[in-house]
Length: 224
Image (cartoon, rainbow, N blue to C red):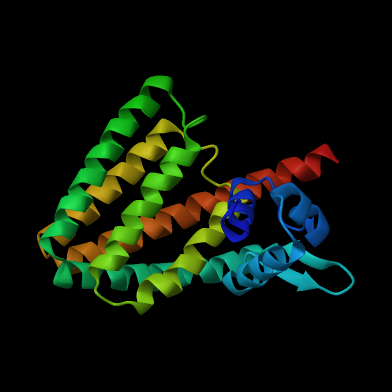
């Protein structure tokens, strides 16, 4: 039996369930092959994470964020992930260094594949997986058990808007370069460079996300 929380969460992140879309417990239970009780529990958990909300006369819907709200989220990420990178550089263990270096090697190989095809299309899920694993490694290397809990929620929300989908291979290369700089700084215990590089990395992602969302909104307005 599928895990209702993980499955619905994945559907939201991948865009199968879109911002503003109504979520019917009966329909979801039928799709997942289970009763409504675990579905209801999953929806409550996703509400806490900020992925859905319960709207009057509608029930559960995939939460739609304004650009102002997304800006607040990115600003929090800049502060918290900058702090996490600094703390990871100060507190990392040798196994964290090995895992970060190994993952960046995997990212480098992946970038070669993306560059050969000239775009990210068809490889988005793998890119997201590598990116999420890298950030999670850094959170764990801090030794602070509260940081992963706080960051997990705010990191996932921009994924709902599928801003990675139109990444060019150059943008993937920029992300790889940032990961290499951050990873090297953490391995070398250079906490100042780790913090600055991480903040720049998040800000670059924010700038692209807002450009992408603005262009998409303009195209939607034009097509009406």
